[in-house]
Amino acid sequence: MTRILIIGGGISGLSLAYRLQEQLADAEVLVLERSSRPGGTIETVRRDGFTIEAGPNGFPDNNPSTLDLAREVGLADLLQSASDSASKHRFLLLDERLRMLPSGMASFLVSPLLSWYAKYRILSERYRRPLVPIGDESIDAFARRRLGDEVADTFVDAFVTGILAGDSKLLSVRASFPRLANWERDHGSIFGGMAHARRLRRAESGSTTKRAGKMWSFQGGLSSLTGALVERFRTAPIFGVTVRRVSRDGPQWRVEAEGRDAWTADAVALCCPAYRQAEALADLDPTLAESIGAIPYNRVAVVAVGYRREDVPHSLDGFGYLSPQRTRRDVLGVQWCSSIYPGRAPEGMVLLRAMCGGWHRGEMLDWDDDRLVAAVRAELAVSVGVKEPPRFVHVVRWQKAIPQYQLGHLDRVAAIEARLAVHPGLFVGGNSYRGVALNDCVEQSGLLAARIAAWAQSARSVQD
Ligand SMILES: Cc1cc2nc3c(=O)[nH]c(=O)nc-3n(C[C@H](O)[C@H](O)[C@H](O)COP(=O)(O)OP(=O)(O)OC[C@H]3O[C@@H](n4cnc5c(N)ncnc54)[C@H](O)[C@@H]3O)c2cc1C
Image 1 (tube, rainbow, N blue to C red):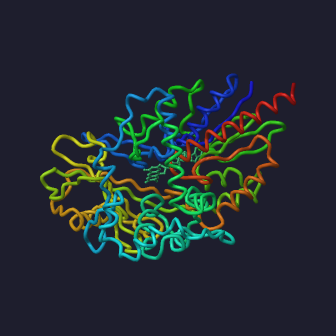
Image 2 (cartoon, rainbow, N blue to C red):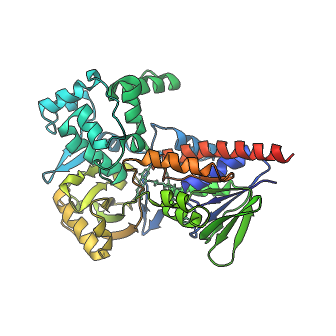
């Protein structure tokens, strides 16, 4: 029987195990996970009647991978989409005021957020000649070239803050947002590519109406998904195992953990974060380990605060707001969780979630809870006018939060893949390579499962 070990039980490792088990009916697929629970960055916490996401808050339906997986594991009835107001109303905090982001052409044309020249640059993007940049291009440079300086400084900076808490000048557009770069390459412009993608989606769904593009989660939070995956495993994951070393043991792989535990297997897939993969591979292949270990991470603190509804003067009618990082504010953005997903706070209360730190303000992770909460309170006084203290607080620190795909990332990934070719049966996955969003992790794990299954089948036919 083929035995495959998966190291790391976040969404990448769990969805990889699920897909492998589907494709290799007679294989043993075993997940080894460092902590005492599945999910990794996905962690739903229930406290005092609040449902708090410590990590991701949801996944959009512009890529169906997570939605499809959820339905397959029987969670269709628990799926919860973001409220209509959250889907339509998103804000930027600029000059100490919340400004609503345009949600359609009419609101875009009258939006005070952009000058007429910036609006002209956006409207004419479709007719601007595509340019094939030599070498890698940053998100910031791409946005300036296609959409102009104002859009890059305000919207793109905020967009990158919201998704990656990173620096748009350092991050590679092809690695971080491949769809944007591909739209220019394949359709001549971002808006041309976007229109094409929309037409495809409509044709697939058979509908002629524009789809809203919503965020999704589950009643009870995102941990429902990771819990449901584990319940469907033929072999239960082993928790509390910190893998330290992966080495060759004759024709097999040997995986050693802290303490004296060790396993052998035909194939190993590392789905833990890049710096842990590097540690585990350091003896086997120092060059490979160095390339993997060089992928940088940011630091993010999540500060969830609960207030009595009457203590918050703002309507909180929307998703929340972002502050472009160039403004260097203490808070990168705030999600109005109980407005996005009703039911996340007890009756008469609201739940908000502030993100602090990120690429530019990593030092904030060294602040104690009181200082972090004070910074968030000061920010919320400005943005939504709340002066009262919160009735509930929950702080989470992610010391290595989100891998940053900086310029040269795709060359690094190509070098890692080339190096792996000399280690048959050794695979790497997870959010460090080709997408950090949950949808990307699930999609990439599906592709990796197909590669591992093909490898296992060919290895077996050689033995037979
Ligand atoms: C604050 C925050 C908010 C986010 N918000 C969103 C969002 O709203 N939407 C979205 O799509 N994405 C979001 N993301 C990104 C997304 O959550 C992650 O990219 C994704 O969950 C990563 O999954 P993963 O399985 O690749 O890695 P991880 O979740 O990091 O899982 C890796 C696992 O490996 C385990 N491990 C580590 N070392 C070892 C070892 N030596 N041996 C065994 N096991 C080990 C860890 O304990 C962990 O369980 C957010 C991320 C953060 C930090």
